[in-house]
Amino acid sequence: MAKLALKGGPKAITQPLGKPLYAEWPEVGQPEKDALMAVLESRRWWRGGYGEKDLDKCWVVKFENAFAAYHDAKHAVACTNGTQAIELALKAVGVKPGDEVIVPCSTFVATALACLMVNAIPIIVDVEPDHWQIDPDAVEAAITRRTAGIIPVHNGGYPADLDRINEIAKKHGLFVVEDCAHAHGSQWRGKGCGTWGSFGTFSLQMGKTLTCGEGGIVLTNDEELAAKAYAYHHIGRFAGRPFYEHHITASNLRMTEWQGAISYCQTQRLPEQTDRREKNAKYFEDGLRTIPGVAPFERDPRVTRWGFYYYLFKFKSEAFDSLPRAKFVEAMAAEGCSLGAGHMHPIQDNPLFTNRNFGPVCYPRGVKPPDYTKTKTPVAQRALETEALSLGHSVFADHDTRSMDLILGAIRKVRENVKELK
Ligand SMILES: Cc1ncc(COP(=O)(O)O)c(C=O)c1O
Image 1 (spheres, rainbow, N blue to C red):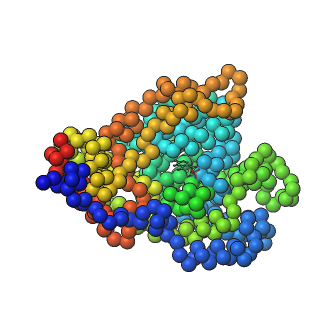
Image 2 (tube, helix red, strand yellow):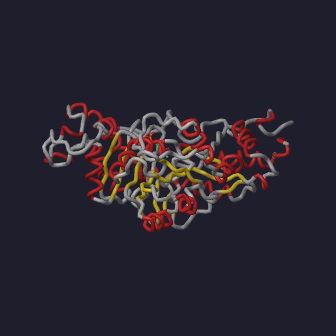
Image 3 (cartoon, rainbow, N blue to C red):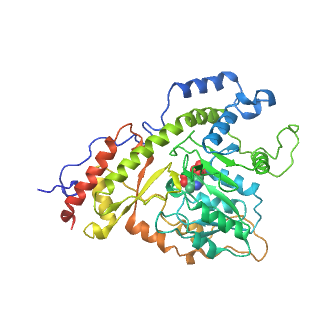
């Protein structure tokens, strides 16, 4: 009789793992309810409802301060979403039409879209093979006289090599904007991701590890850049100047007090949640090391905290009786554990890039985006096809190791009965 569920045997996992998305995630309680009622009754539903004197009562400001403190940043500007957070940062650092901005292929398309939205040209490069983060050598090779900056994305929240990226940026006079949409709470050498470049940008969209449904925030340690980001998110207003005095071309990207209230309460929960997930991840890693054919990342000692949106790990077909990755994923799904590959699918394969459907973006005369069908990213492609595995953060939300044991048990079961899949 077959042992594996894919072949008609019993499922290894018959109960929900972690806190399933959209069911028990996000974690909410009395603080969120009280905060929302307080906003309702205050009748001040936007940040403009507060003056200089009572700014400390504004929920958006409270959120900005708390989020900045947890990430070791001096300044924060909350905004509408993670895509516009990147746009905001790019505007504030002074990106000009036709500037080239280097981004990794393994990310959500928003990283590159934000460049197009400010009339810059995203130059898409490969990731390195160890942790699937933007490859510093590929960045260096892609630099031209038009390059203005680099957007490292902490893919799955695992920090990109910020030392090398900053070194390259310094050498070539480029800005760095960290896309931290996956990296709430992640740390590089003991300091929050989002504070290593000119800006760090975060998404607070529903699936993220800190959410208010839709939202974003930028962090910076530079006072002047913070003032620019504030103006760019507030119809060109400068803080402390008359309300109807507008200084620069800018949109309205303000966060509402509803979102501010929820985000503030969620920020109070974030440190404990991040530690809980990390603890479960480390237990999971110890388990993975005992099973031939799967492996955790070899953690770089400079990664002092991995606050992951999805947890990435590796499949090693050669040690799994040459089973293809896709077959392993299928077998695990049948056992009751759905595995993904994070955002490993190279973004340049989207019709947006293959057809260069860029709409009314404008570049200076003679400047043209590259032919993205020629952009080759073999490391990402290989990882996607053969090696990359991911688990959503909610699976790591338990207060005990129940889900970790169930997943490890299912992997072990597939490994021990791999012959059934041949
Ligand atoms: C890497 C990355 N950057 C940017 C974004 C955009 O964030 P939002 O959906 O809040 O606009 C996302 C969203 O998932 C993302 O994964």
